[in-house]
Amino acid sequence: MNDDPNAFTLGPLQAGPPCCEPQPVIQVRNLSLRYNRQAALDNVSLDIYKGCITALIGPSGCGKTSFLSAINRMTDLIPGCSIDGRILVDNQDIHHPQCDVQALRRRIGMVFQKPAPFPLSIRRNIALPLNEHGTTQKTEVTAITETVLRDVGLWDEVCDRLDVSALSLSGGQQQRLCIARALALNPEILLMDEPCSALDPIASGVVEDLICSLQGRYTIVIVTHNLAQARRIANYAAFFWVKDQAGQLVEFGRCRHIFESPRDELTAAYVNGARG
Ligand SMILES: Nc1ncnc2c1ncn2[C@@H]1O[C@H](COP(=O)(O)OP(=O)(O)OP(=O)(O)O)[C@@H](O)[C@H]1O
View 1 (cartoon, rainbow, N blue to C red):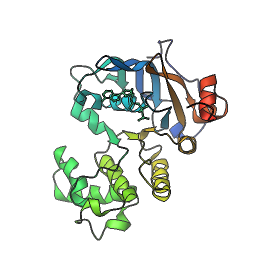
View 2: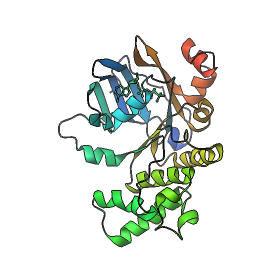
View 3: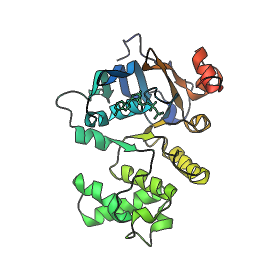
View 4: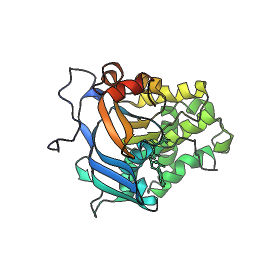
């Protein structure tokens, strides 16, 4: 898949933790995305590496959310949205007519900017998606519920009140519940759209630590406006910018390189705060 001269690919890395081995799991090639006649992304090619955290950065309107939503075909749900180009997940073309979109979304979970638990009990928030995806045995659902609530550090806080409304939790707890809900389906990839931006600094720090703790077990693609956060948590960063009225990928690379020695002047200006 690396025959495309427009693709951003990296050479072999130094020996490092397994999460940093550059093994592409999502390969985006020449992705262009439109909302009716308005272009939102133009000819974006990018590899996302297995087990790593990749941050999508860039100013408002440069197409970060559109890019994220295209990866699990959430963009199918937006009237007027059309896509050109190819997205491969584990070498499977997600736009192939035989692609099972429900299975794709099970493999690729999504967490949104604003915590959006279902207006149900904490327990039902985890059980409902499991039931919908065919896991109905009570003992199994109970075991998964405890596992994922522990994974997000919520179990000790809620284990004695699993039947209260999820809406009674704090914003940070709600967001961790939403991450637990996504993890319950045992995804390989997590897409996160500004998961901390609606939270206060303390809750944001807790969710940020949680995201770091998931690194290696999951491939994570995160949109963030918080450059310090991207720098703290991501292995790779992709910098988008609006050129000719459409979002384009300016530069992709190891996070350290993007922030400390970017190749592109625009990237340097953005990460140094001179532009954007
Ligand atoms: N559902 C939609 N219908 C029409 N245009 C849209 C839709 N969603 C996004 N757009 C447009 O597509 C472009 C890219 O938007 P997108 O939300 O992907 O950018 P973004 O970088 O994530 O922005 P932000 O950081 O503000 O969330 C913008 O011009 C936006 O107005």
